[in-house]
Length: 369
Image (cartoon, rainbow, N blue to C red; front, side):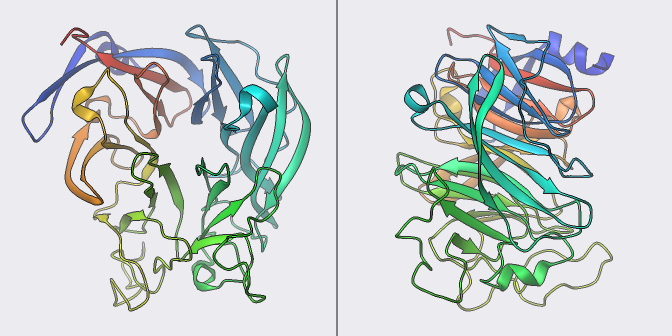
């Protein structure tokens, strides 16, 4: 870790939220030397699992990164944005032991986002089962999506990307590119998926018209499903997901192409759902969490969003389904931030997207306040 970041971690940092309530926190480096860490999740006993994009699954136990990675991870297509994405425990993990993995699968000429599940036994994955592979295959090493989350009925949502060169596919319901899909824990299709009765639609599709989904959060209190996705130059979106909804890409967008060319003259169209929040210029949003905890009461019920290009995180204040404030934190790190999560300890955990990358833990500087 470079000296500037180390110095910042050693200090207590003061961040003023726009409602003028100051939040003091300290930052600890829990694990260092990781290669592009992508996601973090916790097992029921408090053990943390961290994925590294090249295809390693690591374990943090009792606050310490174990030296050896977990064996048995399926081979990934590790190129550019491709690799191992999420490791997500089953909601009933304590009883069934299933762990779900999303990753890039295939070759440079034919690759796709895939989801498999396995059980973790003695630092090894066993009983591996492939549950879902996005179709059609593509020949680009980018825009895989890869974020997953659970709905209360224990169905699994998988966010996908448009493959970059295939953005028109996001409006085609016979393609998984640019969609959010929903499956059962065994890979079967839920009987109440929105397009289940249409022969011309892939039955896994839950919503479509997305560019590159990088954040998914279900709010158990309100029942809302929050999602964010990358725009091109500008037009990053936060959306409230409705089953069967069309979210516009690339017909409606607030962004322009990287060349400066117009993608669409429309920011909204009839029958397409508009975003709840847009970032222009792009911040490249990455992970997202809805903070519920007692360590940071000022953040309770707020969305925290990591950002890659902007090299900071956002605190979004909600009023029901409306985002009424957008504040910046962690810009003092100057790091690309890949994931942000609420830990079982109530702390906020952040992954830096670097090689070497770091697992950071935010906790109150004055825990008694």
